[in-house]
Each structure stands twice: as structure tokens, then as C-alpha cells.
Image (cartoon, rainbow, N blue to C red; front, side, top):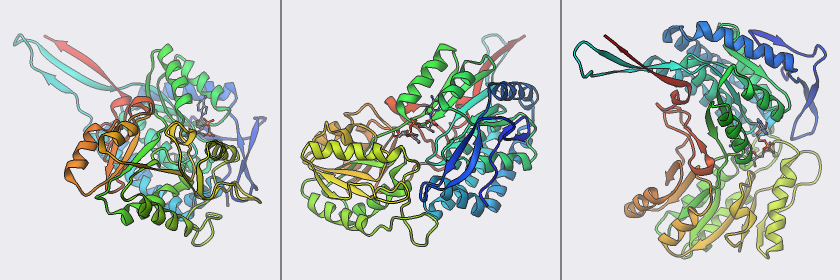
Length: 475
Ligand code: NAD
């Protein structure tokens, strides 16, 4: 059964009661799965006041108690993973195995934050006079407001919630209206784990209106957003205007560098499978494929072979490896990249046109013969579409890889230690993956540089954005 959708404010699940309602659509069938209530202004005020009131006590709570709740949510995540994953496939579209992997992986995020929140330390600073004692203390920043997207509905939300709650903050989260069931499940688990009312609040609505109201409120002290670069810049500007801390996990345009000494078959197979993960709707998806001219033909042949074997369909069906795009807006958004490539005389090696019939399906698409200034080479596509272009020289490919304003992830395939070191030093990205894909684990920092964002989630850095430093000196 698809869950009943509601707001969660001050420990209460509240629904219809005269509120505007939005249909939630299954992207594989276009059937209506449920109705999502939008928060009224009174609901947003109630959430802000609940979070403010709860902060007064939660900030003084023992890290052991916070840790116990996070651990309990980790366990509930494992216990309920199958139902949560099935509902995520229904409202987001990704294949069931991927959805299950996301949910189970998030139990580890809960455990990591449960462990790390017991290790939030300050420090003692040696004084200039013996009678003075000096401390730098870390304190929770206050009420946080967070906005999470639809591509990894469970993962994106749980990382922000665990970091805020573990640090001793309270949080109001606006989840993704297109794919809300995973965030609903998170609220239910924290409720069942005994989180005090008001520490976590969940709202839905028109994204721009909700974020504007919550960020402007004098009650909120910190903003965390995952989503596109243009929206992130707007929200960061608003946060700046009100002098609020901001963590921004924004889009990327991850370059892939395949050198002539790489294991080309292995690289092409791994990259093809990674490219279609979540139908390419991944901020760290490999996006621009630069392949050394000596191995270009071999790479392209293997890459397209693997992509041609991918079974596309309803994520609940057996053997399906790629589902539909998550919502209707994505189909013309992807078609726009193909249209630009066609106009430029590029070759559409496979795919290229949306699949007719029910559902928002777009096939794996490979394009060659593109110039570096083509739309697909410069704007984040966020779909199952891959441009493959040749290069001939290491310095040239580093320059091309660094030529965009983004700096999220990057992928390098080489068997030369010298090349691996040179490229990882030179590449302008928050994350560099060499010969494998290893980002986004709970214990490792995840974040971008340049236009791709501010701050990191995960790793020992995870609480940095949620803590303020207070200096105390006493005689
Ligand atoms: P969109 O830009 O309208 O929305 C992207 C996300 O931001 C959604 O979750 C949306 O609810 C939220 N959002 C939009 N405007 C907002 C606002 N003013 N305040 C708060 N939240 C707001 O477009 P879309 O079609 O849903 O997604 C398209 C683009 O979004 C993609 O091309 C990709 O670049 C980006 N995106 C990035 C991520 C990521 O993980 N970095 C995730 C989802 C989408």
C-alpha cells in the first residue's frame, strides 16, 4: 500500500483539513498514487515555532540520547527497507534493487552520525597568563531549514536530518513533492524512535514559496539545500542577505578521463552501468566522456554494447536495470540536449528519442562528434545521455575537464601511477574517483567546489555546518 501523505509538525501527522492537495504520479505508469497536502502559512509558522521551542531543550540533550535515537532509526530503516524501497520505486521510478540499496545504505548513514555525534569536541587553548583558562566550545547553530530533491529521496533527506539532529539542532525539512514517500517514512521512523516533538518537522508545498518563507524567518539560523545550481545560488543569496549559514550540494558536470593505458573494457563496462544508474539523474553521474584517441573506438564499441543490453522498464518488474525519468518535466529537458546536438551535426549513436506510450521513459543515449561548447558538454543533463569525445594529450584533457564552472565529481581511468597523481592534483573537483566509484559513503566527505556548492556532508566534516564556535575565557 502506498502510504498516506501528510505534514509532520510538532510531533503530529496532519493532512487534508482544507489544505491544497497535489497529486503524486507514478512516472512509469502515470497513475495517481496519492495526494500530498501543501503547508499553509499557518503550518509553516507552526513548524518554525515548534522547532524553536524544541531547540531550547534539544540543544542541552545528551549526545548519548541523540546517538540512541539515530541508531534506532538506523535499525528501523533496515527493518522497513523493503516497503520503503517499493514505495520509492512507485513514486520515483528507479529499479527496486537500486531503491533497496539506497535505503539500506542509509542505515549506515544513521549509524555513522550516531557514532560521530558523541565525538563533537571543543578545545582548550593555552593561555598567556597562568590564571586564565580558555576554551573553544562547539554549540548547535539552532533551527535549520532544509530542502531535498527527488533523485535520492531517502539519502538526501536522511543525511541532513541526521547531521542536524546529531549536532543538537532542530530541523524543518521540505521534501521532494514529486517523490514524497521516502521522506514520509523517515518522519514516521523518528516519531517511532521517540524523537521529542518539534525536533524534526516535515512540510511540503510550492518549493519557492516555502523556502522563501522559511529562510527569511528570524527563527531559522541555517539553510541546507540539495538541487540545481541556479536554485542553489538563489537560496544562498537569500541566506546571505539574512546572514544565515548555508550548505549547498548542487549540480555537477562530472568529467570522465579514460587514458590509453587504462583497462578499457573494464572502464567502458563500469561507466555504462554507472551512467544509467537512477536513469542518469545523479549529481555525480559521469557526464562528459573524454577518451584517449588511441582507445576511443574500442571504448565506444564496448560502452554502447553494454548500454544496448540494459533492460529499461517499470522499476518493479524483474530484471529492469533502468526505470523512467522521475517526472514529466525531465523528458523535454533531455530531448533539448539531443536537439542541440542534432542541429550541430553530431552523431546520435544510440537512443535519442523519448519512448512513446505511458510513462516518462527516455532510452540510454550516446552522442559523438560534439564540440566542447555544445549544450550537452556544458550544461548538466541529469539523464541517461552520454557524449563521448576523443583527446590526445594529458594537459589538454585536464584543461578541458576544468573548463566548466562546476566542480563536483570526476572519474579517471589509468594504470599509470604518475598520470593518476598528476590528474588528481590538477582536477578542479570536490571528489576524484580513480579506477573505481567510491564517493558518498557515510564516513567520507561529499561535496563540491566552484559552482557545485559550499560545504560537505558525511565524513568527520558532517557536523561542521550545524555547529558554531563559542570562545570562553575565564580567570
Ligand atoms: P528544479 O530546479 O525545479 O528542482 C530541483 C530541486 O530543487 C527539486 O527538488 C525542487 O523541489 C527544488 N527547488 C526548486 N526551486 C526551489 C526553491 N526556490 N526553493 C527550494 N527548493 C527548490 O528542476 P527539476 O526539473 O525538478 O530538476 C532539474 C534539475 O535539478 C536537474 O537538471 C539537476 O541539475 C537539479 N537536481 C539536482 C539534484 C542534486 O542531487 N544535486 C537533485 C535533483 C535535481
